[in-house]
Each structure stands twice: as C-alpha cells, then as structure tokens.
Length: 429
Image (tube, rainbow, N blue to C red; front, side):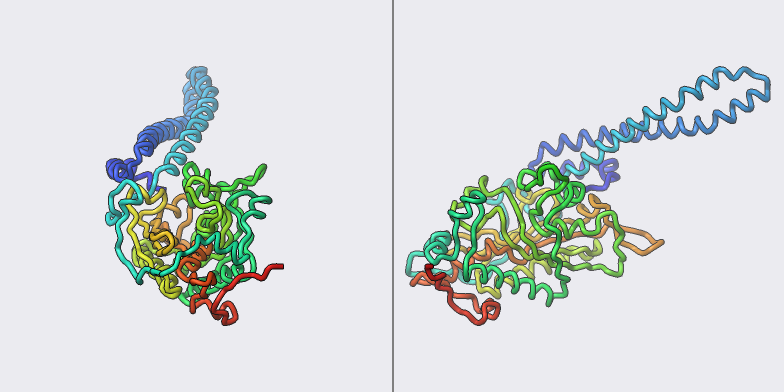
C-alpha cells in the first residue's frame, strides 16, 4: 500500500496516477481516505488531550483540597472523563480501520516508463525473438489433438469437477513435469531457492499481496474456514515474512516456487471448452524476489531475462510488451508480459507476467528489512512466472505439432523424458 504521508502531503501525485490508470472509482476512495485520515488525526489529538487531562485532574483535585476550595466540579469532570475517552478510543479505532481499508484499496504508483493506455491493445512491444512457425498442413486445436492421442480427458473431468478441469494422461503428464523440472532447474542454477509453499492462505495474509476487492472473485474460498486456495505461488512466497524483519544481509532474497494453482476465472475469458490455456487448476514455477529499493529495477530486468531464456531454450518465438496503465493491475508499478507465438491462432499470447511491486506489498504485509537495533525499511518485492505449464503445454503442442499428428519434444526437455523425442499418444486399452 502507499505511504500515508504521501497522501497527506501530496495527494495530487496520486490523483495524476489514478487518471493514468483510468480509475475514477479509486479517486473516490482517495477522497474518502483523505477525509477519514483528517478525522482520525483530529480524534487522536482530542483523545490525547483528554488522557492528559485525566492525568492532570488528580493533581488539580489535590491542590484544590489543600487550598480549601470546592472540588465538586473537578470530581464531576473526572467522573465523566473515562466515558468520553472510551467513546473517542472507539471512534479512533473505527477511523483507523477505515484509513487502512482505503490504503488497501488504492493501487501502487506507476513507474514513469509505463505507457499510458486503456487496455491491452495499447501495450507497447519492446522486444521480439524467434521466427514464427509456418506449416504446410492444418494445425489441429490442441484439445482435439490431445483427445485424439488419448493424452487428455476433458469430458470425464467435466463429469466429476465441471468445465475448466482435465485429466492429463500418459506422456502429457510427463511433458508437464518436464516443463516444471526444466524451469525449476534453470531457476536454481540462477541462485534462487526452491520453495514448495502452502496451497492455502488466510485472508489477512492474502490482503497483504493483492486487493481482495478486485481479486477475490477469481479465487476459491474454503467454506466455513478463513482459508483461500492460492491463485499463484507468488502469494504465499510474498506473505512468507508477514510482520517480520528480514535481516538486511539476506537481501536480495531470491525464491522460486513450485505449486499447483487454482482460479475461477476461465468463464469470463471465452476460452475453448476443451483447452488448457486458462484452467481452474494448473501447475507453475514462479520467481519471487525481496531486495533493497535501489536494486529493484535491475532485478525487474533480471526476472524478465529469466523468463525469456526459458522460452528461448524451448525454441518458441515470443515478444515482450510493456503493459500499459489501463491493463497493469493494482499491485505492480511496472509489468512486462512475455507473449509466446501460437501458430494455429496466428497470434502472440501471454505466457509470463513479470512485475515490480516496489514497496507496495511489503507495506501491506508489514514486512521490513534491517539490522537488530538499527534502521528498518520496506524492501521491494518482484515476481514473474518462470513457466505456467497450462500455457507452456499449449505453446509446445502448437509449435511442435507434426503433420502425422504426433508432437516433437523440444530438445531441452528430452533429458527429462528419458531421451524421448516424439510423443505419439497413449495406446487404447
């Protein structure tokens, strides 16, 4: 979240930023927050004054007695003070809650290099690699291909769990695991520590990494419990040091998470019924970094470079876009999307998002860094996919599909499949 001092001292900076984001609803939040903060500070000052008076009045009564003066008025005031203080304390707590809620709902400040635009059509391409594949045969939709090869069963998954789920079968399971193993190995070689996080998080922790008013509709809530299924391993890694101080000597702290993720969002995006691109359940290797503020923009480029290196190793063409102000989301100050080439669709589609969240998440989580007894600061947090296998699988299936209906295995993945170079399907039984 933002520093309340910035809101008090220079709210116009935030107004200009919200205008870039095309977020008039957030401007209303800012107006309310400014008013709540003024009321909170006023109530706090009144409460402090009453508490000082409570400490003084005993002395005043004693001095009045000593001087032979009537103390009835003072005693009456003393009797009334606890109720007034209690009422003000309640008001202070209520207003403090409103201020925090307002802070949680305001988005991060954008970096000056983020292009201004209303939606993803105005994202700006900054890099491109590889030559898009062209073929002299008709590429089959990947869901149809997988069913023909008996590598996926969408109908039986739909029967027991609904749309957006799938049984992966045979060599598709092994290909999924090969993508995960390759990406995890790559990240560990870059010095990242592997993390297998909890798949469930409490609300307080989740509010530290996302704006739940925007994000909650795509998450699965466990009925009757204060728990949510994770939508990405970024979230439990980001919340790992909630309410803690990280020893500054540990920075940069570089993590790579391996997890299954769960999202409810497929219906709103018009994804094919029999497709893997956007699923309710999928596997992913994620990058996450805690670092000093002055190092975060260097790390942003490093995380992007890692994502690009993985798709170059897979020999899948891609491009990188600088995500515009209207498409960037709440927590990021700047975001790159890496979009792989999907030849059947004849389009680049997002496979990796890479974000610098500056100190926004650390403030929400009360995660600080420093030395014992020394000054503390909010570290910057960054995240990026390394590989999401749902989208990675589709990219492989479209870029490596052959005329005879089989799928070549990318060279870099073959060691993880025992040297196998072609997937021809699962025999009928």
